[in-house]
Amino acid sequence: ELAKQKNKMNKQRELQKIAEEIQECKVCKINKSGLAVPGEGNPNAKIMFIGEAPGKQESLTGRPFVGRSGRFLTSLLNSIGIKREDVYITSPAKYFPGYRAPTNAEIAHGREHLQKQIKIISSKLIVLLGNVAARGVLRRSFMVSKFHGQLLKENGQDLFFTFHPSAALRFPKIRTLIKSDFKKLSKLL
Ligand code: URA
Image (tube, rainbow, N blue to C red; front, side, top):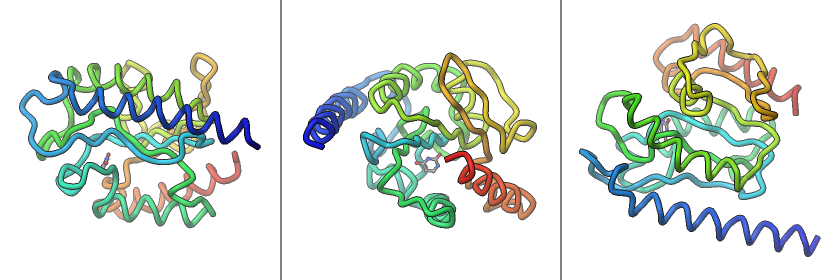
């Protein structure tokens, strides 16, 4: 138990170092305003959730998924008995890109930070919320709509795909699908 606590503190310290690296990163900042949103959660999380990019609310607080999509994500987690504070949440892009998706160049750059976070946390499972998250981790374009609800092992890492919560808020059909994906996810845990 003591060893576990010590390990958690070391991970927390390493994640803090990456967060500072992100906050000081000049490439991340190009054409952006607002705060960096490095990510947050349990350094020992068994599951990591990866989104797309911070929104306006996130850019004002520096915290991931605190707006409308975030409330929906939290409710999806709670619906399968997971507490938000037990998982780790971040995204490939660390700044609000404005009202557009991050570009491929932004995703490719963000991956440098993201990969370090993934390595430190070493969660059993990574849940990719939407195509940007999938591209951020897989380094290739990926149709989440085709592979949602499925598990893929890539380089020894278990990945689970579903939609981005904001897509589910816009489209009732996707809302139904994301809920059933989370049920599948709960069965994998
Ligand atoms: N959407 C994301 O993908 N990430 C956030 O932090 C907020 C909304």
